[in-house]
Length: 288
Image (cartoon, one colour):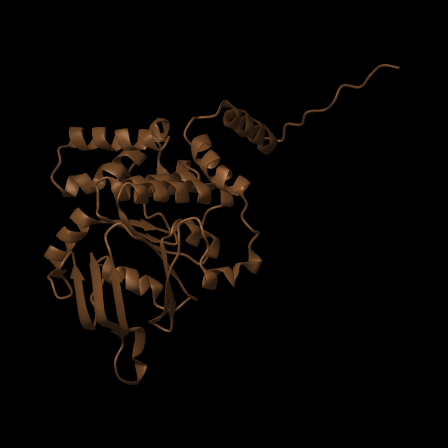
């Protein structure tokens, strides 16, 4: 599905030239889940931007589904992005002036779908991830995990063949991260090709292959069964607790808990609100 051959990306000119990608060769088959790892500045995001047609390579060739797209015009690139690629960013990138439903339905507007149809389709997809009761909320009214779920639904609304996720759990706590990764796992099982940048070796369990980058080049490419951490990623896992079978169940449980609207969450919000107002609950003293 994706084939890069001797792809380089240079910024600046003369003595100020920076090499972001250095003759990268990469082939990705349909239905793979690729995790991309490497230190900051290694070229991970640049690689995703080129694959996602957000940027052009300075040198080299890029073929998408057998078609050369490295030198296509801006309008044609936008059309390919709209029809074949879904993006999930670390910063969520939802439009603050639109509510959840309108944010999710926006890609369908560029495709010419009528307002009634696109809102109906967006509402159905939000219901599938447990956010039906949040569709008229503004992004600022949601938690980080909920906002990222909205971003994933928006990325999937056009049924893209490729989903590109740049640090999708970077701004989330562990519980929200599990929900997001379980959703991406379900998307992968449905046949989508996923490319995900991550700094967390634990998340490579969800991938079928891990690509390691350094100084703009791919230095290692390792296939691994889903559920296992590859050997190279395992070497840096001393900073992370070892995952057990209970953790695997916890990932599914986190996703299930995220779908229904818990009444207990309302009580917690009420208690938090009272605390902010300065209300204190004092225990009754017994008469002696």
